[in-house]
Amino acid sequence: MAIFRDFSSQKRDRSASDRQRHKELVKKKIKEGIADIIAEEAIIGKNKNKVIKVPIKGIKEYRFIYGKNSKGAAQGTGNEEKGQVIQDGRGQPGQGVGQAGNRPGEDIYETEITIEEAVNMMFEDMELPDLDRKKYFQTEAETYRKYLGYQKKGVRARLSKRKTMKNRLKRKKILGSNLQEGESFPFHNDDLVYKRLVVDIQEHSNAVVFCLMDTSASMDQIKKYLARSFYFLLYSFLKNRYRNTEIVFVAHHTEAKEVTENEFFHKVESGGTMISSGYKKVLEIIEQRYNPAIWNIYAFHCSDGDNFSSDNRAAVEYAKQLTEVCNLFGYGEIKPNTSYSWSSMIDEFRKIEAENFISLKIRNKENIWPALKKFLTLDHSNSLLED
Image (cartoon, rainbow, N blue to C red; front, side, top):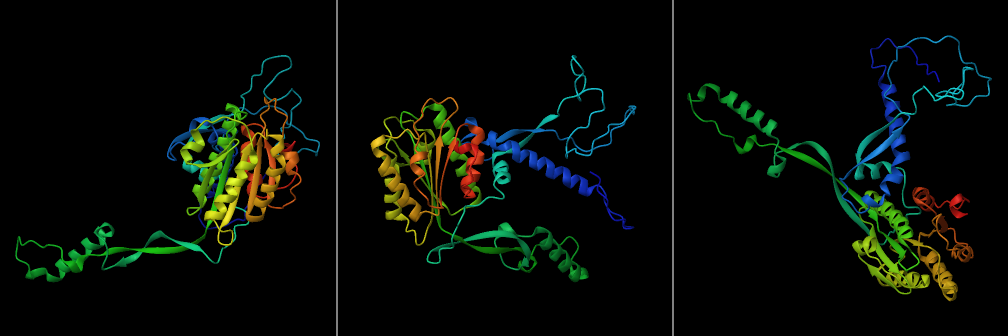
């Protein structure tokens, strides 16, 4: 696609916009490929400074290529779409007729990026939905943005050595001939200059996020990996975007209990499944510690849906109660493609008509990122995740 620019007699870097577009393309490719990598089991819970490699397909640094001009020209029909390759009548690009191809394949190279940088890139356009500003209870956070000007008093760590040295030299020049040869000329308190920091006071509405996970025996290794991958993405998002957000971890089988972050991501349990126990525990914690009038409350639950049938009614009733106090309640049913379990709670949860309740299925790690985006955008549209 040709891009025409107005002529300007002013000198400028005419390739700057091209470089910027290339950077945006690279950034887009990283965002497209990072979701699966960040959810890998090997990096769950690792330090945010850990370096990971992201494959980027189909992008080369822009440059002129000189070579032989081939005869003939490709011709379209007028119905082509953007990105479509027009053939020249001699076969598909990269392959002959009945022969091995002799043209280069798609370029793939890797770029290194830290987990923190990847998370920043993934979540830059996302936020918790329906985050209300609770007028009764807000916290303030001091954020030091940048240095702005100088001042005569301050802490030694912010001493401007350059400005201080200039003041000393000015004072020495003024005294000039009054100084004896070889006489020392020490710094004076009046020489000292300190950098001044601008302090930005930001208000943050309080929010609490409940991470609820089924740890029963039916949650095998694959299912637990998918659940933990989802929660690792969610946890990374919260830590990246919301400093003051509290995160509560709850694990359940036939009974539920509040657990630590380490226990949540690493501890293995067994037993039957009673989903209502988890919802009841979350409601109890909300009543004890998080008044909905002054807290934004979010709850996410991952389970394989293999619930004790006599518990289904109670589970639905407690789920309805959660929708009444939560900004968002999301249920993700872990159903791997290799799973032989046909039991599902999603059919039961269809009885819940609340706008802030979303249920969907997660079949593989490729579904994890789309599932999180559907939750955070309150997207009720049908998708393959719900099949």
